[in-house]
Picture (cartoon, rainbow, N blue to C red):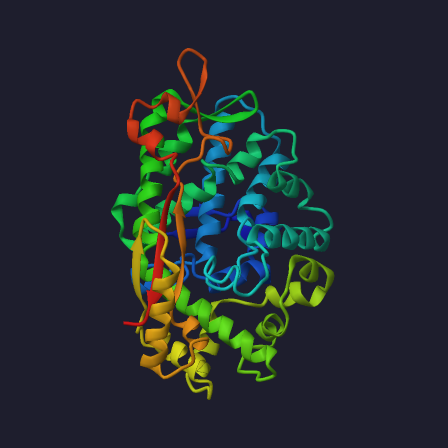
Length: 409
């Protein structure tokens, strides 16, 4: 062990204060190139176009989630639950690496670069490859990440409706955006955690903190994650990527980094991704800078659609967004596309890049998906929606849908 680790490496985090790197495994994972890549991927994608302070990264978030995991495990140990050192280390590794499979701009391009491949699957694939590289040091972490480890509460700490991931990103995103309605007290919630019947539970006296957590999550979705300007910017970026891929398939290659070019030349499904080593290796090189470099170069492309989209993105000439509770009528979308085809002097087919539509959903809490359990003073376990005396908690279980239509201003 290095002298640096003997002194306990400390990172000063603006949200949680001092974060201690507890052991050699975590230290080595943080310093691995795949994890360092997360420094170059924004946590909130293009949300900085709305909230200029939202420039924090997946690297920040992963460290914060790991810190909260140490607090949760220490709390459970203090309450008499035996946790082996190997379990402790594995849980830290699992939460540290939970987002390692994110691509450029986090969720924004998840479906634009790959064909129905989710970042959770890529995360697992990368963790498994790291495990081989580290001679099996992550085998237990993989079980916890997968939910196959017999002590189920470990997986709940990594992935559930009250996991360390959510506790960190809500507090962190609220801090960096300045949206105070999303502020929570993760340390208070963690102090209220316990284990009963091998399930993660919350002491009854912590129910108000959970209510605040769920309300904050709902508000952050509408005010930050699904903000109409964020939707607008992401739609523009997706359309630029779509256009670049189309040009590649037509034999008109445009500027792209070597790693990015692989995903433009081929529609990469999960089967292709896992069958050819080069795709995983290329993906591990991609970050936000690959895309921004392309956007800067594409503004000079001869293709009018790609050039215009890139120029609009760079100069924040964003789409206008109309959002409502009713599905956008087909006739209205066609009329809008026809209008902008004439306005921009492009074909009706090309107008599809400038007039887009879709659906947004906001589900703050879903009890059917292994809900949050409250341990009552009588020793009963109740779902928080049942245990709460606030009617709005039950209302948060409803999935809210909104439909949007984007077009130039």
